[in-house]
Image (cartoon, rainbow, N blue to C red; front, side, top):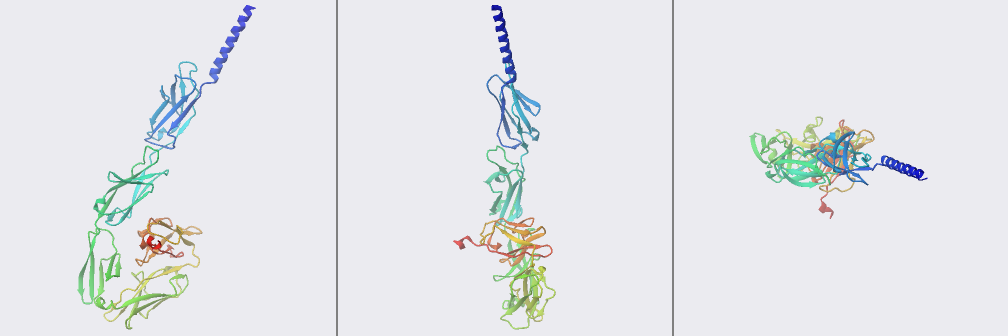
Amino acid sequence: MVAQKTTIDILHKEGKKQKVIAKEAGYLPAATLTIEPRWSPVFTGESVTLKCEITGYDGWRYQWYKGSSKTAVSESQINTFTISSAADQDQYWCRGERDNRPRSSQNSNKVTLTVRDLPTASLTVDPGSTVFTGESVTLKCEITGSGGWRYQWYKGSSQITTSTDKKHTFTISSAADQDQYWCRGERDNRPTSSQNSTKVTLTVRETPKPEPKTLKLNGETVTLRCDLQGGGDTEWTYSWYKNETIVHTSNTSQEYRISSVNLTDSAKSQAVLSVSPQNWLTEGDSVTLSCEVRDSSTGWRFSWYKEKDELLSDSSRRSGGFYTLSSAALKNTGVYMCRAERGEPAYHTQYSNPQPLWITASSSPVSLIVSPRRSQHFPLDPLSLICEGQSSSTGWRVRRYSLSESKVSDCSSGWGSVTGSTCNISYLIPTDTGVYWCESESGGSSNPVNITVHSKSSTA
C-alpha cells in the first residue's frame, strides 16, 4: 500500500507540474502600448513617446517593433524618438522578454502613427507691395491642411502681433514701416509651428504732392499739366478742379486742355442732366435724357457721353437738349453726361452731373445676393456680393456705380477681391456707398442693389 501511494503522489505532482507549464504557455502576460502625444497627425520635427506596460511581473527587457521590423531593444519601457520624415509613418507595437518564466509577454496592441510634413504658410499683400504713407495694407496668411491656427505676424525679425484672424490690416504711418514682412501659424498644445512664409518686402513712399503747371496759353486754348513729385511708376488717375468742383478726370494723361473762353464764361454756364421716367429700366423700355444750360440764352449745341470718355456717335453736337433711347438694351447700362457748346470758335460748358442708367433683362438668369442680408451697413463691416443663378453663374462680374466718385467700376479694380462670381469687400468704408449689380460678358445685367454705408454715430 505504501508503494502504491507513493506512485500516486508522484503522478499527482507531475500532473500538477504539467498543468503549471501549460498554464504559463497559454496565459502569457499582456503588453499594452500607449503613445504620447495622442493627436494625429504628427508633424515632422515633433517628438513621440511610446510606453510598453506589462503587468504581474518585473525584470522585463522591452522589444520595440515598427511594422514587422524590430527597431530597438531596451531595458526601459519608454521609447522616445523624433519624427524625421514621412518614412516614420507605420504601425508600432512592443513585447517583453525576461530571464525567468514567463520568459516573454504577448505582443501588444498595434498603434498607427500618421506623419505629415509641416504645412507651409503663404503670405499675400493687398493692394500691393508698394504703398504710400496714409494708405492701408492687408496681409493675408494662408496655411494648407488642417485648421485651428493662430497666426504670428513678423516685421523683420520682430513679432508684431498674434491673432486667430488670417488677415492683418494696418495703416502705413511713415517710412519706418518699410521692411520685410512674413507669417507662420501655431496651434494649442503643439510644440511645432508651420513653416515660415516667404518674406514680402513692403516699399513705402511718401505721398507725392501734385504740382499744377501752365504749359501753353495759345490763342483760345490753355494746356495745364499735373506733375507728381515722387510718384514713381505708379498708375494715377488725374482729377482737375475748378474751385471745389471736379471739371475733368483722366486715367491716361496728366494734361488738361481748356478753351480760354471757358475760363470765364463756363463758370456761368452749367449743363444739368435729368432722366425721364426713371434711372432703373427693363430691357425694351424707353428713356429720355434731358440736358439744359441754366441761366443762359439759347443757341447751344449738345453732345452726349457714356461714362464721360465715350462720345455717343449718334448724338454729337445736336441742337435741342434731348437724347432718347426708344428701346433700351442691356448694353446701354452705364453713366451718362452731357455738355453744351456754342459760338465760333466754340466754347463749352462743364460736363453735366452724371446720371446712371441700369437696364435689366425681363427675366435675368442671375440675381445679386448681398451677404450678410441686412438693411444697414457700417464702416469696417465685411460684405460679400454673390452673382447667383438657377444654373451656372460663371462669366458674371460684380460692378458698381460709386456715388462719391460718379463712375462705374469692377470689383477687381481694387475695392474688392474676386472669387469666381463672388466679390468680397474685406471692410466697408463710406465711399463704398453706391449701386451694385451683376453683369455678364455679353452685357446682361441682374437686379441693381442700392448699398449705403452708414456712420455708426448716425444710428446712436
